Image 1 (cartoon, rainbow, N blue to C red):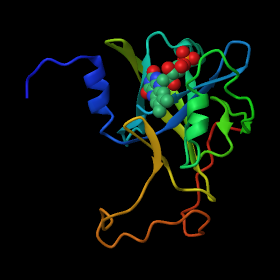
Image 2 (image 1 turned 45 degrees about the horizontal axis):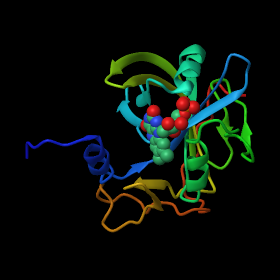
Image 3 (image 1 turned 90 degrees about the vertical axis):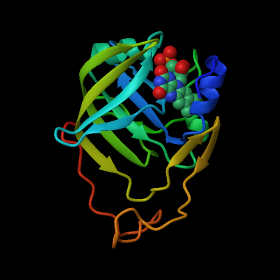
Image 4 (image 1 turned 45 degrees about the vertical axis):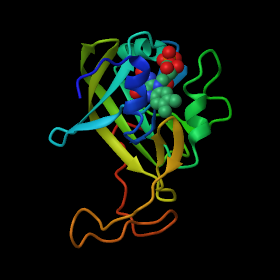
Length: 191
Ligand SMILES: Cc1cc2nc3c(=O)[nH]c(=O)nc-3n(C[C@H](O)[C@H](O)[C@H](O)COP(=O)(O)O)c2cc1C
């Protein structure tokens, strides 16, 4: 399986791995909200609770992330493909028409399905991207909406269960609007 490939082949093949989608938000030095679509957000460690994301080294959001030292990872729901697109377009007001509330680390988009407040720990240069590792200092889930947005081969979709839960005896997954979800944990750093 060792054969020459180009960037297009690389991107296309990576696209076969479905991911969730986040909007990473923070504030610029003037206190204005900034944010970018990001599907490289993943978990790193449970104790301490660490996450990571990869940001292109030409990204303007990277400058603001470095300056602010923190961000909110807004996990998008299945109906938010258009919102994701909006947060990947340059030179527009990405927050136009978006409901959000302020937090200590960055805007929380009201219609996200979960939020994580993160404090940047360390960064590593990796090719044309920067790996940012951050500690999760607060989190909260949306009681009314649970279906995630899924990104796969350049398309947006939603999650469909096709097999038994991973953990034997695990309770059924709560449905959107259902009331069986465990209580959320309020972000410790947000107002
Ligand atoms: C579904 C999706 C996922 C993306 N994931 C990332 C990512 O993980 N890292 C990244 O640097 N850019 C990612 N992008 C691209 C950025 O959102 C886009 O380049 C944006 O313009 C960066 O904006 P900025 O230069 O204002 O920071 C993604 C775009 C989309 C549509």
